[in-house]
Image (tube, rainbow, N blue to C red):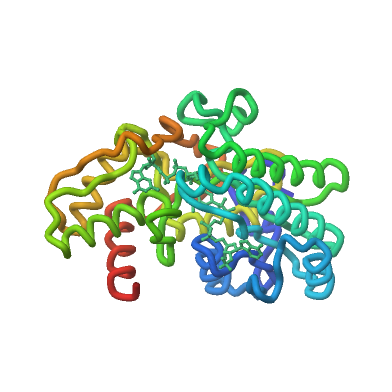
Amino acid sequence: MTTDATAPTAENDLLPPPASVFVAGHRGLVGSAVTRRLTADGYDVLTRTRAELDLRDAAATAAYLAAARPDAVVLAAAKVGGIMANSTYPVQFLEDNLRIQLSVIAGAHAAGVRRLLFLGSSCIYPKLAEQPIREESLLTGELEPTNEPYALAKIAGIVQVQSYRRQFGASYVSAMPTNLYGPGDNFDLETSHVLPALIRRFHEAKEAGAPEVTLWGSGTPRREFLHVDDLASACEVLLRHYDGDGPVNVGCGDDLTIRELAETVAGVVGYDGELAWDMSKPDGTPRKLLDVSRMTALGWKPQIPLREGIAAVYEEWRTKG
Ligand SMILES: NC(=O)C1=CN([C@@H]2O[C@H](COP(=O)(O)OP(=O)(O)OC[C@H]3O[C@@H](n4cnc5c(N)ncnc54)[C@H](OP(=O)(O)O)[C@@H]3O)[C@@H](O)[C@H]2O)C=CC1
Ligand SMILES: C[C@H]1O[C@H](OP(=O)(O)OP(=O)(O)OC[C@H]2O[C@@H](n3cnc4c(=O)[nH]c(N)nc43)[C@H](O)[C@@H]2O)[C@@H](O)[C@@H](O)C1=O
């Protein structure tokens, strides 16, 4: 069995297809990409909509998992949003995520689910962590205030996974993705992450012939962006070949400033007006570039260059809405 980040082989495959996998949050950005990937590779993917199963309901979640008895669970259901959503709804970001994690991880263990992959986020690391951020920097410093409730819920999820490993020998693991983007993202300007917001702002400004687009903060924070299809392939690698105690960072290994991102998105969209910066809006953490050596040691590497990925997402959103 693979106990740490070593290159995968057919012999150490912990979850070969056609195993059954419950993807919690299958309609979301990450869950839909994981569903596409696992289905394409021959897995039996099980899903439930939120209307069918509210994952905050521990009894209903336990009952579903006991009846379905999947071989594995990917926990991609969560209350998720950009910097403003995190700042505006701290109660939901803390409580929904704690409740979903408690329901799904405990319910999976009670149902005898063999493998589980919990998805956290790079915001779990200290605001001023040494860059690139290694998994070992968890809990070594203060968190970024704009998303502290969300980060604390995610840290609790990591510790919950580790506790099931230590107390019951469960083969459960955690992944910490960097900022993600891809098809089906949230383009609502109040709650979205920066990348879909920029696509929408520049597109609408171009359509309206607006001379200037105003963005949030100073433009100086640095962020790393990974296409969600690359994350989905990392999730499959982790399910099949990783059984270590620590979380695994998943990122592309490169970052850029928000201003540079804005220039890239404006180029893709074909907007050539001016940029203005609304300094009353928060910058958030100054930088969070992940050290991805644990993930790349498993033989994974990202495939989708940023500009190409943005162009595909823009085309998809423009044509399908
Ligand atoms: N997006 C990003 O940039 C990043 C995301 N991540 C992590 O990836 C995971 C998935 O995020 P992402 O796909 O972006 O988020 P989305 O908001 O796109 O998807 C979340 C999914 O969870 C479902 N969900 C939320 N609450 C409940 C509930 N109470 N019961 C049942 N289902 C529920 C939603 O259902 P419905 O469709 O009904 O709303 C939705 O399908 C999260 O754990 C997040 O922390 C990590 C780093 C970056
Ligand atoms: C994935 C990650 O996502 C969040 O952290 P974040 O990276 O700070 O979030 P963001 O994508 O919203 O912003 C990135 C940067 O971009 C700037 N910015 C400019 N203009 C717009 C704009 O129009 N919209 C948004 N949203 N941001 C803008 C913004 O001011 C900030 O400096 C957390 O929820 C956290 O919990 C988390 O895990």
